[in-house]
Image (tube, rainbow, N blue to C red):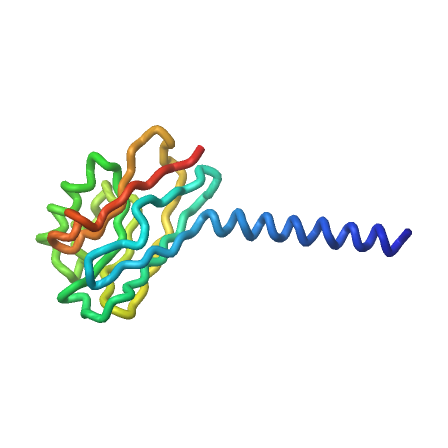
Amino acid sequence: MRKLLFSTALSIAALLGTSNAAAADECAITVESNDAMKFNTANVVIPATCDDFTVTLKHTGQLPKQAMGHNWVMTTKADGQAVATDGMSAGLANNYLKPNDARVIGATDVIGGGEEATATFSVKGLNANEEYMFFCSFPGHIGIMKGTVTVKA
């Protein structure tokens, strides 16, 4: 009987550990970009239950960031184009983002082929009813390098 209880307790502990790991996995995503100016996903889902969300951007291409750099930037859909336009004059040294731009919810650094960058940002204050987007702010890339971000209640 003791063995059965111990075995059951271990099984429950293992299941709880698995569900906690699954919950943590829901609060992070890896997105790939390439030399063809494409992200490997068009939609990112952020569970409202996350305190923070982490995005890791991997550049699977070979070109340097000066020629074909990419970043991952999240804003409201209404702010996206204006943030990208303002970022052009900020230059590569500022990751093509206006410094301290309050419209940016989260953003990685600009990276080149073979590199990766990670950004973690707070989910608090995000609204499931708001329209969000992600894009690359490298000049001209927002035209095709963009997608939606959904906050799942």
